[in-house]
Every structure is written in structure tokens, then in C-alpha cells.
Image (cartoon, rainbow, N blue to C red; front, side, top):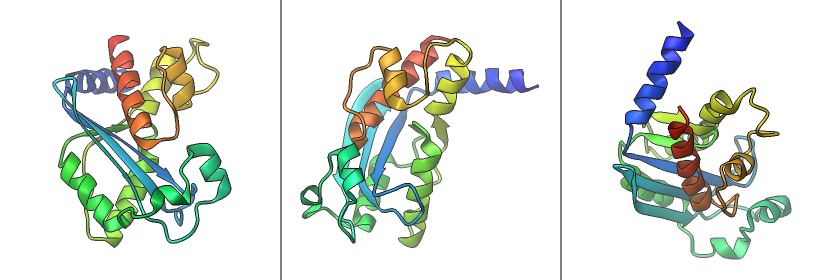
Length: 182
């Protein structure tokens, strides 16, 4: 039954104490957008043991609305590695660890797409914390939407959104709170 599957899923999730939380910032939402920042936070035995952050060189100026959302400017990308080098560094950081992310499908689509173009494979198991939040908080009238910043605020987690490392760390905190509230 789907209830049994959900229980098994949460049991598996609760036993996962070593993982990396990832987040990316991009120049847009479509598949032609470029990754401009990658952040990851590594957790072992429920403790943060490492952080990874890099800007990524873009082939064109960052659209103004993206700079408004992320505060990432063209100047931030000066001297940043190209996507291939950035992905190699990320891959070296996360290895084969399970990954969590907030709407991780979005991030993985970009990582797999650019990874494929650069012969770098991302096959890590993933857990979507957005899906967990929707399941756990649904019908409780506690959040008006499931944006990362809204769910973080609900749990009293203070952070600056739309920066990869901050989002990755906030995702860990939300993940832990959702696991506590089983």
C-alpha cells in the first residue's frame, strides 16, 4: 500500500545520517539556463563536516532579475571556474553520498544535463525535502506555500535565501525538523 511505502520511505530517511545537501543558482528556469553557483553541505552522523561553494563562469551577463533574486553579480563570476571544473570539484566533494535538496529534481536536472555534456556522472540517491514538507505539513494550514523560505520561517530557521550554500544548510535544518516530527 502507499501508506506502507511512505512508512518505509520515512524509516529509510530517518536512518540516513550521512549525506550532502546540495543547491544551485541558475540564470533562469529553462534548460538553456546556466549554473552560476553551486553549494553543498556534507553531513556525517548528523553533524556538518564540510562545506562546498563555488561560483561558476557564465557565457553571458546574468539577467537583472536573477541578480535581484540572488544578489549574484557578473563581478562575482570574475575568475570563477568553468562548469566542467566546478562539477568536478562538486563530484569530488559529494562522491557517491546520498543527496538531499529542496526541489532536488530541479538541481539534479541541471547537474545531470551539464554533467552529461562534460562526461561527469551524478547517479547519487536523492531525497526531496520539498516533497517531505508537502507530506508532513499538508492539511495542517500551517504554511501558505511550500517555498524554502516559508517552510524555514515556520520552523524558526533564519537564513538568507537564494544563495546556494545558505539554501543547502537551511534544507538540512528543515530536513532534520521534518524527521523529528514523524
